[in-house]
Amino acid sequence: MFGFTPELYTPEFPVQGDEVAVIDTTKGTIRVKLDADGAPIHVANFCELATMGFYDGIKFHRYVPGFVIQGGDPNTRDMSPEDVIAGKPGPDGMPGTGGPGYRIKAEFATNPRNSHVDGALAMARSQHPDSAGSQFYFCLGPQHALDSGYTVFGTTVEGLDVIGALRVGDEIRHIDIVHEA
Image (tube, rainbow, N blue to C red):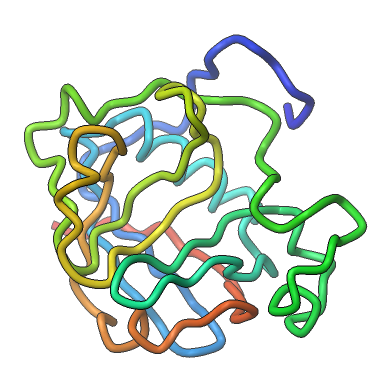
């Protein structure tokens, strides 16, 4: 499943529409209400990766003050926080260049709630709109210039202070997907 495929991947996780991601980091816990109605492919993909433990041990690798904090690159899993901070290559490649080996279809144009508000959870991608895989970011303040090019798939409901404290090298310990009304 993690070998590169040029085709778009369709996640098999059965979204129900009441998913909340509980993201345990070295700085604290973040709770994100996922938007399965607006971005079903992105939510299914994120939930599938999270329930497989894909994100466990991955470090945040990009921080731009007042803009975003980004993580989800498996290349950082076996790296020390110090090496991620220094921007050194890891055993699997440079931080910021890794993914699950597939890509998913963009949903920013079809999501009626695709708004990069403070604490929005969105999927990072390369130049091609349909190139997202596992890397995600949290908005550090409103970033509406991104609304027309990047898919938002969740809204932080608890832990904005944690998001604000995250920096390069901080670790995702585990992500649980729970169901809440």
